[in-house]
Image 1: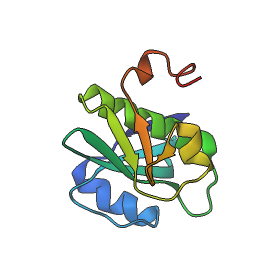
Image 2 (image 1 turned 90 degrees about the vertical axis):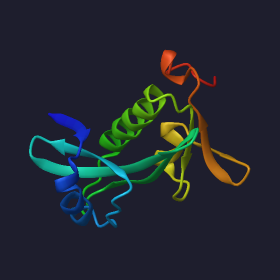
Image 3 (image 1 turned 30 degrees about the vertical axis):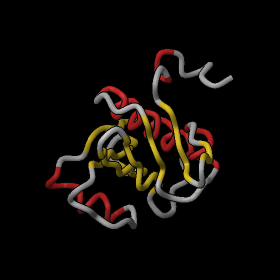
Length: 125
């Protein structure tokens, strides 16, 4: 069963290392797991009125688009629930960033979260 939840500070460095990404103490981390098997990681932080996703990736050797999509949306929902209604993806544009909802705006991957989770399936249509 797919489980996505926050990673406690004490375990974040190990999860980041397993996913081949740099650990930063200033970021929050979500992990996607299939039971006990680590599938991927989403790292993010909030600053002012904007949430920033810095990584959304699978563990090397794993290709689970659905897990990344759900984890990306869950992260954005958390950011929105914190009262932060703008989001920026700090990596490169990809299939997953487009699917999650980021669009290139003024040279950055941006998403307006205002009202997004009220009707996410019909947002921006």
